[in-house]
Image 1 (tube, rainbow, N blue to C red):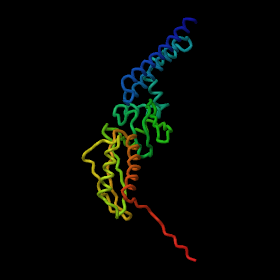
Image 2: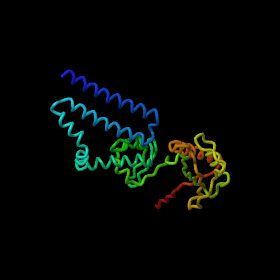
Image 3: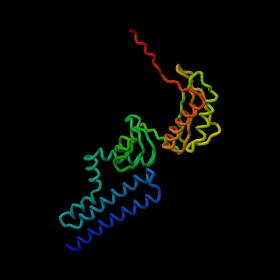
Image 4: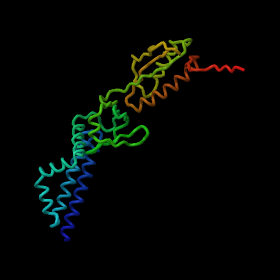
Amino acid sequence: MTGTVIRICILVIGYVAIVKLIDYIINRINKKELHIKFSSSIIKALLGIIALSAIGMQFSTTAEISKIIMQSSGLLVAVAGFAAQEVLADVISGVMLSWSKPFNIGDRIVLKSSNITGVVEDITLRHIVVKTFYNSRLVIPNSIVNKEILENSDYSGDYIGNLLEITIAYQSDIDKASEIIKNTVLNHELTIKDEDTEVQVKELAANGVILKVTVWTKTTDDNFKACSDIRKTIKENFDANGIEIPYTTFDINIKE
Protein backbone atom coordinates (compact mmCIF):
# COMPACT_ATOMS: atom_id res chain seq x y z
CA MET A 1 0.00 0.00 0.00
CA THR A 2 2.90 2.32 0.84
CA GLY A 3 4.41 1.72 -2.61
CA THR A 4 1.09 2.62 -4.25
CA VAL A 5 0.86 5.88 -2.31
CA ILE A 6 4.42 6.76 -3.30
CA ARG A 7 3.70 6.07 -6.98
CA ILE A 8 0.56 8.21 -6.85
CA CYS A 9 2.48 11.05 -5.23
CA ILE A 10 5.13 10.79 -7.94
CA LEU A 11 2.46 10.91 -10.65
CA VAL A 12 0.77 13.96 -9.12
CA ILE A 13 4.05 15.80 -8.57
CA GLY A 14 5.17 14.91 -12.08
CA TYR A 15 1.91 16.19 -13.56
CA VAL A 16 2.10 19.47 -11.63
CA ALA A 17 5.76 19.91 -12.56
CA ILE A 18 5.09 19.35 -16.28
CA VAL A 19 2.15 21.78 -16.24
CA LYS A 20 4.31 24.41 -14.53
CA LEU A 21 7.05 23.80 -17.09
CA ILE A 22 4.56 24.25 -19.95
CA ASP A 23 3.34 27.54 -18.45
CA TYR A 24 6.93 28.73 -18.06
CA ILE A 25 7.78 27.86 -21.68
CA ILE A 26 4.60 29.54 -22.99
CA ASN A 27 5.37 32.73 -21.06
CA ARG A 28 8.94 32.71 -22.35
CA ILE A 29 7.92 32.15 -25.99
CA ASN A 30 4.91 34.38 -26.54
CA LYS A 31 1.84 34.02 -24.33
CA LYS A 32 -0.16 36.34 -26.61
CA GLU A 33 -0.15 33.98 -29.61
CA LEU A 34 -3.57 32.33 -29.80
CA HIS A 35 -2.46 28.96 -31.22
CA ILE A 36 0.30 28.61 -28.60
CA LYS A 37 -2.13 29.40 -25.77
CA PHE A 38 -4.75 26.96 -27.06
CA SER A 39 -2.20 24.20 -27.75
CA SER A 40 -0.98 24.43 -24.15
CA SER A 41 -4.58 23.94 -22.95
CA ILE A 42 -4.92 20.79 -25.07
CA ILE A 43 -1.62 19.40 -23.82
CA LYS A 44 -2.61 20.04 -20.20
CA ALA A 45 -5.97 18.31 -20.72
CA LEU A 46 -4.32 15.24 -22.31
CA LEU A 47 -1.76 15.08 -19.52
CA GLY A 48 -4.59 15.26 -16.99
CA ILE A 49 -6.38 12.30 -18.63
CA ILE A 50 -3.17 10.28 -18.76
CA ALA A 51 -2.37 11.08 -15.12
CA LEU A 52 -5.85 10.08 -13.95
CA SER A 53 -5.68 6.84 -15.92
CA ALA A 54 -2.23 6.08 -14.51
CA ILE A 55 -3.49 6.71 -10.96
CA GLY A 56 -6.47 4.46 -11.61
CA MET A 57 -4.09 1.68 -12.68
CA GLN A 58 -2.55 1.70 -9.19
CA PHE A 59 -5.67 0.17 -7.59
CA SER A 60 -6.95 -3.28 -8.33
CA THR A 61 -10.58 -2.11 -8.28
CA THR A 62 -9.99 0.53 -10.93
CA ALA A 63 -7.05 -0.96 -12.85
CA GLU A 64 -9.22 -3.04 -15.14
CA ILE A 65 -11.52 -0.08 -15.86
CA SER A 66 -8.55 2.18 -16.62
CA LYS A 67 -7.05 -0.47 -18.88
CA ILE A 68 -10.28 -0.82 -20.84
CA ILE A 69 -10.57 2.94 -21.18
CA MET A 70 -6.99 3.24 -22.43
CA GLN A 71 -7.48 0.42 -24.95
CA SER A 72 -10.93 1.50 -26.13
CA SER A 73 -10.21 5.05 -27.19
CA GLY A 74 -12.48 4.72 -30.22
CA LEU A 75 -15.44 3.74 -28.08
CA LEU A 76 -14.58 6.48 -25.59
CA VAL A 77 -14.59 9.09 -28.32
CA ALA A 78 -17.94 7.85 -29.61
CA VAL A 79 -19.53 7.95 -26.17
CA ALA A 80 -18.03 11.34 -25.41
CA GLY A 81 -19.22 12.66 -28.74
CA PHE A 82 -22.77 11.59 -28.03
CA ALA A 83 -22.85 12.73 -24.41
CA ALA A 84 -20.96 16.00 -24.77
CA GLN A 85 -21.69 17.38 -28.22
CA GLU A 86 -21.63 21.00 -27.07
CA VAL A 87 -18.33 20.52 -25.28
CA LEU A 88 -16.78 18.95 -28.37
CA ALA A 89 -18.20 21.73 -30.52
CA ASP A 90 -16.44 24.27 -28.32
CA VAL A 91 -13.17 22.31 -28.43
CA ILE A 92 -13.31 21.91 -32.22
CA SER A 93 -14.16 25.59 -32.60
CA GLY A 94 -11.20 26.40 -30.37
CA VAL A 95 -8.96 24.37 -32.68
CA MET A 96 -10.31 26.26 -35.71
CA LEU A 97 -9.79 29.63 -34.01
CA SER A 98 -6.28 28.59 -33.02
CA TRP A 99 -5.51 27.55 -36.59
CA SER A 100 -7.03 30.59 -38.35
CA LYS A 101 -5.94 33.12 -35.67
CA PRO A 102 -8.55 35.88 -36.17
CA PHE A 103 -7.19 37.44 -32.96
CA ASN A 104 -4.45 37.04 -30.38
CA ILE A 105 -4.34 37.53 -26.62
CA GLY A 106 -4.49 41.26 -25.92
CA ASP A 107 -6.36 42.20 -29.12
CA ARG A 108 -9.42 44.45 -28.99
CA ILE A 109 -12.32 42.70 -30.70
CA VAL A 110 -15.98 43.42 -31.44
CA LEU A 111 -18.50 40.58 -31.87
CA LYS A 112 -20.98 42.24 -34.19
CA SER A 113 -24.05 40.04 -33.70
CA SER A 114 -23.69 39.85 -29.91
CA ASN A 115 -22.68 43.53 -29.62
CA ILE A 116 -19.73 42.61 -27.38
CA THR A 117 -16.59 44.75 -27.28
CA GLY A 118 -13.48 44.10 -25.23
CA VAL A 119 -9.92 42.84 -25.02
CA VAL A 120 -9.15 39.11 -25.28
CA GLU A 121 -7.53 37.97 -22.03
CA ASP A 122 -7.44 34.19 -22.33
CA ILE A 123 -8.56 31.15 -24.33
CA THR A 124 -9.25 27.67 -22.97
CA LEU A 125 -10.53 24.44 -24.50
CA ARG A 126 -14.13 25.65 -24.17
CA HIS A 127 -14.20 29.44 -24.13
CA ILE A 128 -12.43 32.76 -24.46
CA VAL A 129 -12.32 35.41 -21.74
CA VAL A 130 -12.99 38.99 -22.85
CA LYS A 131 -12.36 41.98 -20.60
CA THR A 132 -14.90 44.72 -21.26
CA PHE A 133 -14.30 48.45 -20.87
CA TYR A 134 -16.37 48.28 -17.67
CA ASN A 135 -13.62 46.05 -16.20
CA SER A 136 -15.88 42.99 -16.16
CA ARG A 137 -15.13 39.63 -17.80
CA LEU A 138 -17.26 37.83 -20.35
CA VAL A 139 -16.79 34.08 -20.76
CA ILE A 140 -17.83 33.26 -24.33
CA PRO A 141 -17.97 29.68 -25.72
CA ASN A 142 -15.58 29.07 -28.62
CA SER A 143 -18.42 27.80 -30.82
CA ILE A 144 -20.20 31.18 -30.52
CA VAL A 145 -17.04 33.15 -31.31
CA ASN A 146 -16.34 30.92 -34.31
CA LYS A 147 -19.73 31.78 -35.84
CA GLU A 148 -19.55 35.52 -35.18
CA ILE A 149 -18.71 38.37 -37.52
CA LEU A 150 -15.64 39.63 -35.70
CA GLU A 151 -13.96 43.02 -35.91
CA ASN A 152 -10.34 43.12 -34.75
CA SER A 153 -8.74 46.56 -34.40
CA ASP A 154 -5.28 45.00 -33.95
CA TYR A 155 -5.52 42.29 -36.65
CA SER A 156 -3.02 43.62 -39.17
CA GLY A 157 -0.63 45.10 -36.63
CA ASP A 158 -0.86 48.49 -38.36
CA TYR A 159 -1.64 51.81 -36.76
CA ILE A 160 -5.06 52.61 -35.33
CA GLY A 161 -7.00 55.49 -36.89
CA ASN A 162 -9.97 57.36 -35.44
CA LEU A 163 -11.93 60.10 -37.18
CA LEU A 164 -12.17 63.28 -35.10
CA GLU A 165 -14.91 65.78 -36.02
CA ILE A 166 -15.15 69.33 -34.70
CA THR A 167 -17.93 71.79 -35.54
CA ILE A 168 -17.23 75.54 -35.68
CA ALA A 169 -19.61 78.46 -36.15
CA TYR A 170 -20.02 79.94 -39.65
CA GLN A 171 -18.58 83.30 -38.54
CA SER A 172 -15.36 81.64 -37.27
CA ASP A 173 -12.12 81.56 -39.27
CA ILE A 174 -11.97 78.13 -40.98
CA ASP A 175 -8.27 78.37 -41.88
CA LYS A 176 -7.29 79.33 -38.33
CA ALA A 177 -9.43 76.55 -36.85
CA SER A 178 -7.93 74.01 -39.25
CA GLU A 179 -4.42 75.10 -38.33
CA ILE A 180 -5.15 74.75 -34.61
CA ILE A 181 -6.63 71.28 -35.07
CA LYS A 182 -3.72 70.07 -37.23
CA ASN A 183 -1.04 71.38 -34.89
CA THR A 184 -2.80 69.92 -31.86
CA VAL A 185 -2.96 66.47 -33.48
CA LEU A 186 0.66 66.49 -34.64
CA ASN A 187 2.02 67.80 -31.34
CA HIS A 188 0.42 65.14 -29.14
CA GLU A 189 2.98 62.65 -27.82
CA LEU A 190 0.88 59.57 -28.67
CA THR A 191 -0.03 60.40 -32.27
CA ILE A 192 1.85 59.16 -35.32
CA LYS A 193 3.53 62.13 -36.96
CA ASP A 194 2.40 62.30 -40.58
CA GLU A 195 3.19 65.22 -42.88
CA ASP A 196 0.10 64.35 -44.94
CA THR A 197 -2.25 64.99 -42.00
CA GLU A 198 -4.87 67.39 -43.29
CA VAL A 199 -7.98 68.92 -41.81
CA GLN A 200 -10.90 68.70 -44.22
CA VAL A 201 -14.34 70.28 -44.37
CA LYS A 202 -16.74 67.40 -44.02
CA GLU A 203 -20.06 69.23 -44.18
CA LEU A 204 -21.77 72.60 -44.09
CA ALA A 205 -24.31 71.63 -41.48
CA ALA A 206 -27.31 73.50 -40.13
CA ASN A 207 -25.49 74.62 -36.99
CA GLY A 208 -21.97 75.16 -38.38
CA VAL A 209 -19.01 73.93 -40.41
CA ILE A 210 -17.89 70.37 -39.58
CA LEU A 211 -14.12 69.87 -39.80
CA LYS A 212 -12.59 66.40 -39.68
CA VAL A 213 -9.14 64.90 -39.19
CA THR A 214 -7.85 61.36 -38.64
CA VAL A 215 -5.89 60.69 -35.46
CA TRP A 216 -3.36 57.86 -35.87
CA THR A 217 -1.79 56.02 -32.91
CA LYS A 218 -0.02 52.72 -32.29
CA THR A 219 -2.73 51.13 -30.11
CA THR A 220 -6.43 51.49 -29.42
CA ASP A 221 -5.84 52.57 -25.82
CA ASP A 222 -3.43 55.28 -27.04
CA ASN A 223 -6.09 56.46 -29.48
CA PHE A 224 -8.72 56.88 -26.77
CA LYS A 225 -6.37 58.95 -24.63
CA ALA A 226 -4.99 60.97 -27.53
CA CYS A 227 -8.45 61.92 -28.85
CA SER A 228 -9.56 62.94 -25.36
CA ASP A 229 -6.50 65.15 -24.85
CA ILE A 230 -6.78 66.62 -28.34
CA ARG A 231 -10.44 67.62 -27.87
CA LYS A 232 -9.58 69.37 -24.61
CA THR A 233 -6.63 71.25 -26.14
CA ILE A 234 -8.62 72.25 -29.21
CA LYS A 235 -11.38 73.69 -27.02
CA GLU A 236 -8.83 75.73 -25.04
CA ASN A 237 -7.11 77.02 -28.19
CA PHE A 238 -10.43 77.83 -29.83
CA ASP A 239 -11.42 79.90 -26.81
CA ALA A 240 -8.08 81.74 -26.89
CA ASN A 241 -8.45 82.55 -30.61
CA GLY A 242 -12.12 83.50 -30.63
CA ILE A 243 -13.30 80.46 -32.58
CA GLU A 244 -16.79 79.48 -31.54
CA ILE A 245 -18.11 75.94 -31.18
CA PRO A 246 -21.87 76.25 -31.74
CA TYR A 247 -24.38 74.68 -29.42
CA THR A 248 -28.16 74.62 -29.25
CA THR A 249 -29.87 77.43 -27.33
CA PHE A 250 -33.53 78.17 -26.63
CA ASP A 251 -35.33 81.49 -26.20
CA ILE A 252 -38.27 81.24 -23.81
CA ASN A 253 -40.95 83.92 -23.98
CA ILE A 254 -43.38 83.99 -21.08
CA LYS A 255 -46.73 85.46 -22.05
CA GLU A 256 -48.50 87.28 -19.22
